[in-house]
Image (cartoon, rainbow, N blue to C red; front, side, top):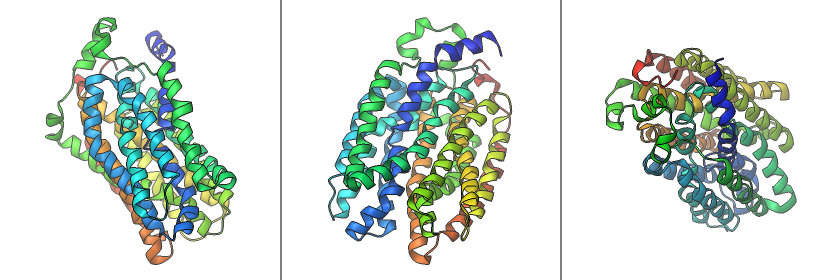
Length: 412
């Protein structure tokens, strides 16, 4: 590894750490990975169906999808720091509001809508732009390390939420969750989240770095090319599978006879594997052709989804969760890496925001579809079968991206 590569990682590790904490506490991760532990106590109190409760994530994700192009524009214009800091406070307000819901379903939707709108600046557009424009030699590894925040949250949030619910009830759980972005993330972001910004620090950049930040397709140019649609469709199919399984894994396992703590432990394996997937894939894409790495990663969750059919042992469920989580961990940083490599950095946030909008829609619709399958059939097995097929379709699509454009190498 070259000296410049070592310096890049050594000098900017505080940015990676702060970004990771921001992701742990963000609107697209914290509500998503805590909702499984809240599903049973809330629906039992108010008599709602599981699909009705999961529809709140659909509503929240839909709002996130609608706002993501605006967040992309704000990131390109003002920089990630100015977008992230106020949004963390807004997310806390949304989570706190959820603790006050009563039997009216609209109050649940209001609370999750507030999480999406007030916390809009905490979506991946902000975090991946900060890393993609600050790292060039080891962008893949930096993205992987920063995005381990999703895996850490997936591992810790279910246990934290179960503990809060057992100790203080589900209302206390929402209050406890609201403290995470406010008391943990915001101070770290304020002191350490300082990404490179061409608009404010252009004079401090080396010439090749400044050139890389200014080079790339416009959103219109990207949309007119086939690679944009190949990447978007691959994300669409893969995330329908990941997003359907993620928040329904815990209730699926408790239905199969696991205790809530055992199910939370399997969910934690899912989270740990996301971390492993992020780091391993981040390391590999700096050295190998990224679509090939992506194809392998999208093939293995098909086996994991198949393993979750019917009853299974704790070990089998944990292995399945690991395979699915590893791939889910790989997909988000692959999307960021591939967007930067194929479309350049000049308009990265705008382009990525459209790709993220697709992901957000999947994150919202898939949990509700999975829950509806359960409400109709009394089982999640059909959902797992469909997810396995979707993963294999994504494998074929991602291989169509072809060679990297040389003009967007940006220091590689």
